[in-house]
Length: 328
Ligand code: PHE
Image (cartoon, rainbow, N blue to C red; front, side, top):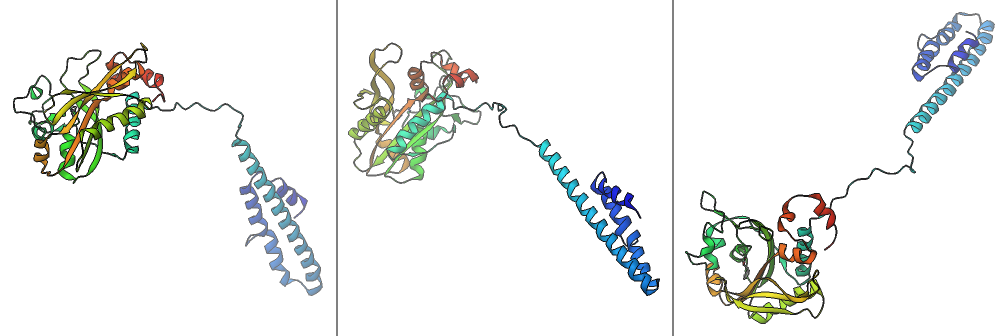
């Protein structure tokens, strides 16, 4: 053994080579190990001198192995750090952020208003049956709304709900009064599609039932909604009209300034009224009164944000999301 050995250790190219050297020198059958083992065969004086030299040599080899190992490990770490180096000054990759559809925004805004007034938000099925969509809502059997002109029927006699009012019936069938609920959802009508008519649109329905609920409460609820949307002092109007499931029934409007023309005018929103006794009868309620109202979300969204063609709301065109990002 000579200093070529120490040189070989100091220049071992990697940890594997270094380990091979360690085995060759210090392993069970390593050169130094064998040398130390053979000491026993020597005469005592010679053994002492030779032993001291071998131990000295062993320490030097061990120190060299350790030093090289540390150096190789540090170099490996440096290389890894260099490879993983992150330049925090590079411009990031732009991740396109999603956005809520205009209708979703307007719906959420409305739901926030009603949640703050203590209403529970519930949803119902879009595929309905005749009883919930019509029968229990006091539609006469020959009512034109059941006509194939308006309603999409399935071949097994069910239908796509034509309004969110069937959820009035479903909710009352499974809950006891008093309560306040709002029902957002998609509805379907077999309409000739044009700029203001779609075969699918969305409504928001409200139903409040309890003891001594009156028309004043109905007017108050609509005014609260209008105030939350448009500010305090907003006026609302109820005009008598007919829906089979309310009595008296009315259409309601809010007084507002049209965002485009700047003119102050009534914005007709939807229908409302006091829940018809026959509806309560159909769900087995007694001794309570209640009110309901429902209106189209598209119309409110379109006039508020000047969307002139309802079909644009359903085209899936990303430009609509971009144009109305975070407006409501
Ligand atoms: N469901 C009615 C419609 O779609 C609106 C309405 C709801 C009317 C609740 C009165 C009470 O036209």
